[in-house]
Length: 385
Image 1 (cartoon, rainbow, N blue to C red):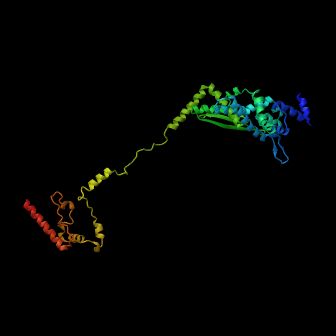
Image 2 (cartoon, rainbow, N blue to C red; image 1 turned 90 degrees about the vertical axis):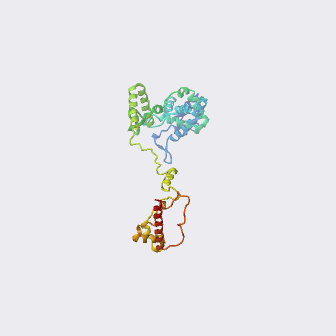
Image 3 (cartoon, helix red, strand yellow; image 1 turned 60 degrees about the horizontal axis):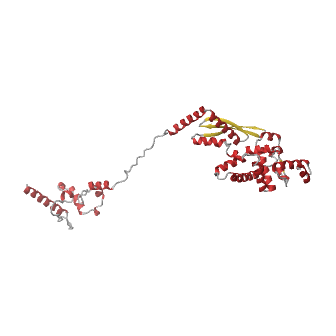
């Protein structure tokens, strides 16, 4: 019956008849524009170019199919697991559209046999089938639309070839699992690329896992991601089977944390010095010592400044003091030069201000007055004695 349908299409070449038949078995519908599917099955190793000299391969359709697959599988997972959280849905979708799953589907559905590529690339590149599967979905979207892609994935792939429940609860991201274990135990982890072998333009990557500086297992793959996944898987198996390996990791961690806890320099002092602040109490005590009362303040004399002043700016008292200091009678204390604390009697009943006068006095009058006051004080002292 399938051959009769193909004969009705009246394809001019036998190769196109075989491609139509193969695509119908894979996607469940006949292609409308066969050129989309031919381009989806053309690997970049063929190196074909169009009329403008640009390379022709399936990479652009692969990009488009990847986006369509994310939307379709996300829709299916959302409806299949009602009530599940976003993290669970994202993890399940990533498992269904990852390269390993798509490679297995391409092999089981016969897509890998239809890929046009060089022999050495097909034998080495493990992702060629998965990339062609995505490109085929992109071609189906351009040829038949989004609903055709949804029917293909929901009715042909997920309903017949994949148990979505088993995939959802199966852990396949070993690198993420190992990183989660290291974070919970506060263990330093590193993925180091140790070597890259270039064989016929198809490199092989080698990755080694290190936990707290202790070397774990090494994995090899055709991409960095694949090598890291294999190294993480082998390291997880070693952690489960070798308790000595875990002991060495935690011993290295203890040594590291001990070194980090030791101080590398002296701890600076945290004393707060407030000696630059003068409190009101200290200020009052200083004022109390310096100024016992209003009238008993300490007087500081600067004779050097007084001598430097010009005679025309000196007062009569200053002139009298200089004259008495130069004369033989300078030993007699003058009332104006005496300490106010000795001459003012604050304990008496009455404060006498008669010696304060605004009248100008000559030098001779000042000396005579001083001698008279001194004589009266001496007589008074003798009479009291």
